[in-house]
Each structure stands twice: as structure tokens, then as C-alpha cells.
Length: 258
Ligand code: T3D
Image (cartoon, rainbow, N blue to C red; front, top):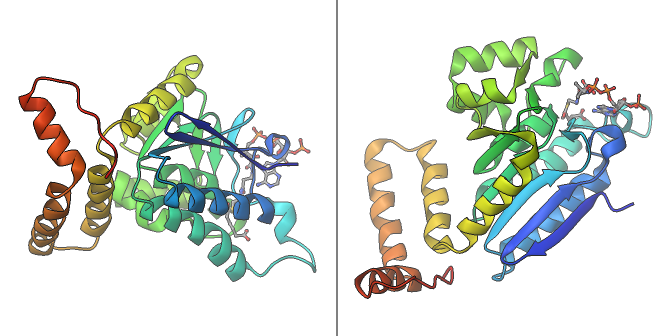
């Protein structure tokens, strides 16, 4: 069984979680498979954007709980370090836009992986559950970092402690995700967004992602210095030159991501 499906559509790599019978919960093979695909996307110049989604009725129910029980279970620290920390590091440090289409329930690590993507759409049947507290764990996969920043400490605390299900619409309203979409048009909307991004100046978009990441820890002055540094990099790019030339020549630009 191939637990991670990939397809290249023009300049977009579509990655699908594929264990629908267990709501795409992560066993080790699926976690390592996702990491490997993300690593490939990071270094392949032909891939300019990524779409992450899943097969079946769920997006992802987090850790496969059958794999972490019993005498052959992997130690928790190894699971967190080698699976979830690595997935989140990849999602946040790949300097290419990553769009997520949450097609159904996203629970535990599944929820926080969706929230670590750059632009997250969810179908109106989707939901988000910080399922960790129900089994005595803390939110991992960057949840303790991302969630308070997205929705504020009060809501983050309530959702993490109570483990309540949040609908896609509520998630949109509280700023947890970018947009809730009619279920039937979710995939097409997410794919067309990823395709649109893949034709844009993706080098500059990648630098924007780097700046946003840094802004989580920087004060204003450090961030202004970083903007100056990154703007020089962006300004020396092919795409900046092309964008300005195309504007002045009143033609469509041809961006290369360089
Ligand atoms: O090592 C570590 O544990 C550290 C890592 C932690 C990261 C984490 O993600 S911890 C959180 C783990 N996830 C959960 O606790 C969520 C468990 N699942 C659920 O609460 C529910 O399944 C859902 C709310 C997500 C969906 O509910 P529902 O009613 O739509 O579906 P269901 O009937 O519960 O599940 C359908 C099947 O998927 C079912 O199998 P069956 O009965 O048809 O053979 C169920 O057992 C299976 N399934 C769902 N989630 C998991 C799972 N199997 C293994 N692991 C799961 N996480």
C-alpha cells in the first residue's frame, strides 16, 4: 500500500495522505513517506507550489493510536522528533507556497499539520479537533506555537484543553484557516490557488515565508532589518526584473521562481 500519493500537475506537486480506512492517521511509513515527498519538493526547481490533501472522508486523524501501544511501540520522543517535528519543519521551511485542502476531519497532529501550511482551505464538512487532551497528551506538531498565534490564547486554551470539535466555518471565522469552501469545489479551489501561486514570483514568495517565520520571534527593529536584507535578495531576482519590465511593457510577465 502506498500511503502517500503524489501527482505533478503543471508546476504543482499534489500530495495526498492515503490511509482512508483509518481516517489517514499516521503510521511510521506514512509519516516518513510524507517527509520524503516534501524533501523532494524542496529541491525540485520544477515544483513551484505544493498542494496537501487526503483521500476519503477525513483529512487526518493524527497519530495511528494502534502503533503507539504495546511492547513494540516506538518511544514517544522518537515519534514526535522523527515524524511530526520533521513534517512541521519541512512545511514551514520549504520556501515555496504550500496550500492545504482539508477535506474532512483533521484531528490531533492532523489538525496542526493543516494549520502549519501557508494557505489552508477546508470543505464545509471538515472539522478541526485538538484531540490530544482526550488521551492525556499535549498538542504537538507545532500546535502550542501556531494555535495561540492564529486564534489568541483564550481560544487556543479552550480548544486544546476541552478538545472540542470546531467546524470549518468556525475555523474560518476565528482566523484559524484562510477559507471554508463548499465541499464540491474544495479541491478545484485549492488546486487553482496552488497553480496560480506556482506561476507567480515564487522566489519572492519564499522569502516572504522566511520573513513571516522570523516575525514570530523578532521585535520590530529586527524585522525591519530582515525586510531590508530580504528585499535586496528579492530585488536582485530575475522575477523582480521581469515583473517591472512586463509592467512597463504592458505585457504578461513570465516568472521563473529565480
Ligand atoms: O505517540 C504519540 O501518540 C504522539 C503523537 C501524537 C500525535 C497525535 O495526533 S495524538 C492524537 C491522536 N488522534 C486521536 O486521538 C483521534 C482519534 N480519532 C477520533 O477521535 C475519531 O476517530 C475522529 C473524531 C477523528 C473521527 O470520528 P468518526 O466517528 O468520524 O470516525 P471513527 O469511527 O472514530 O473512526 C473510523 C475508523 O478510523 C475507526 O476504525 P474502525 O472502527 O472502522 O475499524 C477508527 O478506529 C479509526 N481511527 C480513527 N482515528 C484513528 C483510528 N485508528 C487509529 N488511530 C487513530 N488516530
